[in-house]
Image (cartoon, rainbow, N blue to C red; front, side, top):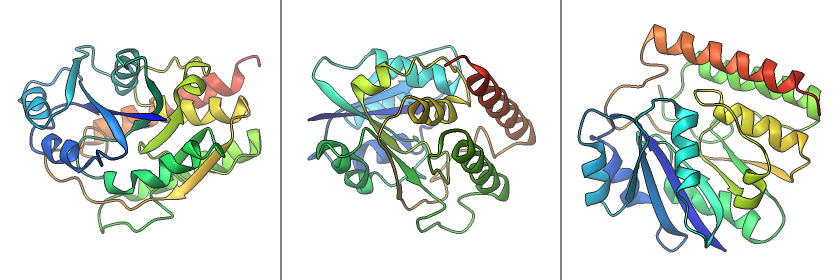
Length: 229
């Protein structure tokens, strides 16, 4: 199965080349970096590293992910998402992709809380939010999640059938909720996690970012949970 990687990026010129370079080419045939309105050299660095760059000037994590999906080539069968800040570990991509290639699962998500975490890579709020979301989703859909990790893989046709709508920080949670509700075969696997390799976090790096992300995640949960099935 052809595997494609989507990396949403906003002002990640310090890290994006290394992230692209760490993607195992024996697994991923296509790497797309979505420049989400950067005002630095993120796009230039990504191209130099060998990625295709797609521009999505309207800022929003969900918008960037959707733009990447919309730009995929026709041969892509499995989509892998990861962050562009160097905190995810692309060398572990096979853990996410192989269960799908083998036909056992449709959606595989990494769990940073179950893997080895570098000190300071996740703050208390991030860990707690993942645990709470996992408990709520277990109650709603009887699917076990422990994290809302951005490092994940999903069959492209399964993703297309989810009807994703979230344009900002709630994209990851919406995918998990819709996948569970759709009855996809879901697997969570431990993945390691590092502190970001450079730049500043748009979420946990500022109080405003943390509050905005938290608000959007809560709104996403309420919206999807209350939708008519």
